[in-house]
Every structure is written in structure tokens, then in C-alpha cells.
Image (cartoon, rainbow, N blue to C red; front, side, top):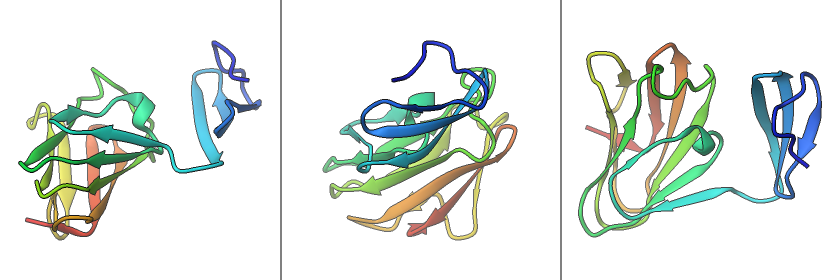
Length: 136
């Protein structure tokens, strides 16, 4: 079971997700018994609990998935979140505060169409990279 406060170098299991506690402040997901899904139907700002999850976005209209600044939610560098466009509405990755948080990509920050899957990875403080089936 999960401790209220992680204990450094301890392995924990919550029934669906295994974690290794890197430090007393950092719990890292390492294995799952199934894909953990956070289903969204409207604009959404990612939360620390989304780390390692698949966010599905299902709406006929466009949806924006926003990334907060490190001052609001301090995701560990290396955090990965997957985003899948299930509905007809294109999903756009956006920073809550664009002057502080940077979202970069080689091919774009929007899903390329229905069923497109993109990956959002934090590579440095307030810096995220989008990869996968993305477009401009």
C-alpha cells in the first residue's frame, strides 16, 4: 500500500501501479497492471497525479490541455504524460503561462487527428517537449 509520505528507496503498490520512492519527496511510477487513464471532455490543466498516465480527450470541438508553471505544480524532470485525441476535436498543448513555461516540438503541439497519440515530457525546469503524432 502507499504511505502518506514516501520513504526513500521503498517499493510501494496501490493495487494498479508500482512505485519506487527515489527520495522521501519523490515517488516514481515503474510498473502498472493496466494503462492508467484520465478521461477528459473539456479544457484541462495537467496535475501531478497525471504523471505516467494517458489523458484521453473526447469532444466534438477543440480541447486545450494546459501545462502549469513549476511554481504551481513542480513535476520532476523526466515526467511523461500521454495524450490521445479520441473525439473529432483537435487537442492543443499549451502553457498556462507562456512566458514562463515553454512547450516545444519538432512537428507541432497539436494532435494530428482523431486517435492521434502524443507524448508530453518534461526535460528541464518549465520546459516540456511534445512528440508523437503531432502537427502545427
